Amino acid sequence: MDNLTVFLIAIGLAMDTLAVNLGVGTQAGISRRSIFRLALHFGIFQGLMTLIGWVAGSFVSHFITSIDHWIILGLLLWVGIRMILSGFGKTTEPTLPDPSRGKYLVMLSVATSLDALAIGISFSFLEGNILIASLIIALVSFLLSLAGGFLGRRLGIAFGKKMEIIGGVILIGIGIRILISHLT
Image (tube, rainbow, N blue to C red):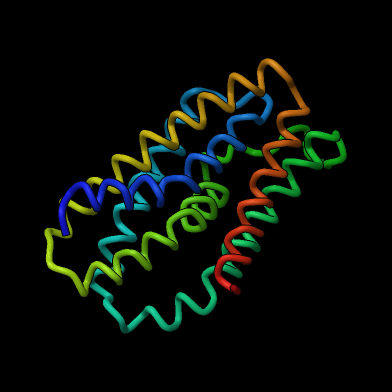
């Protein structure tokens, strides 16, 4: 497996992290530090999950691939609905908690990296340096997620609460797209 192939796979894997951080970036009051922290964790989780998948090989693939889309859908629905409610001002909290901390950080990082686990499993059947592949995937995910977060932040500042609603819809759309692609 050559590095160009790994780079192209990394771009495909990073689309979810880019879209999620774009959606999160639209949240009112999101800080640059939060966007960076989220992108960093997305990159780390993408790289580590690829490595874990490679180590686990085919043993875990049957379990993970049968439920990963449902887990992703549930997590993204939960966060997306909360963002939409916050955008409409229908939440009991004044604003959503910082998504780059605590349970939100873990949920979003896991939800966006389950596909990387599956890729790691497929890499276990190929020849190549898994450490280099994992590093490429981590770096691409970090950079694209960072770009998405800052773009979302600019849109959120420019358009306010409407962008928070759109961000929530984007997260729900990603979850539904993943579910449909796994079920078909």
